[in-house]
Image 1 (cartoon, rainbow, N blue to C red):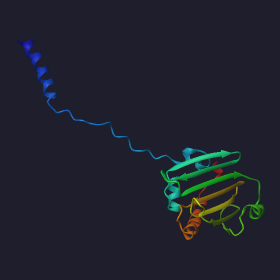
Image 2: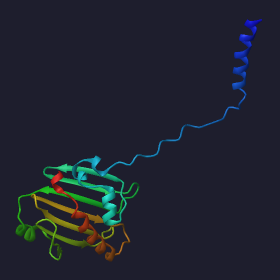
Image 3: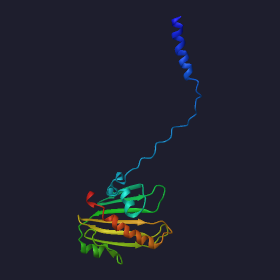
Image 4: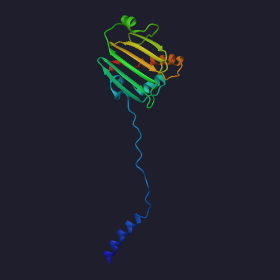
Length: 181
């Protein structure tokens, strides 16, 4: 009799656990995307941080790509799924001095900037067939590097907006430490 009770108890317990209706569920939800730092792309992207870019320019980016060719390191950042706006940083090793920078590198008509490297400029460029106007800041860093930040706006952006962005790029350029390359 005891053997029957011992066999009956597990059978009752197993049957009790099976009384719930099976629920249909699809595949598990994918995990939320993990933010990736711009620096993880290498190259000049090591000098950029998405949060710092947003703080200084108001632009939100989350995709970065880098390339290197000779002594030039370049990084392009964009928002996922959007071609423009984009921010490009290029840094090149150089042996030029401030006078040569002013004569040979600084575009005519560009405004000089003080308190950015040894010499610096800012300018806006007109729209093209594929994009709106662009804002550009170039500077000769104190450690022998030539750097350029360019913000290319989407088509339909007013030139006045590019002018404002050029000022914001100056503040961003002042926090970029090109010695980190």
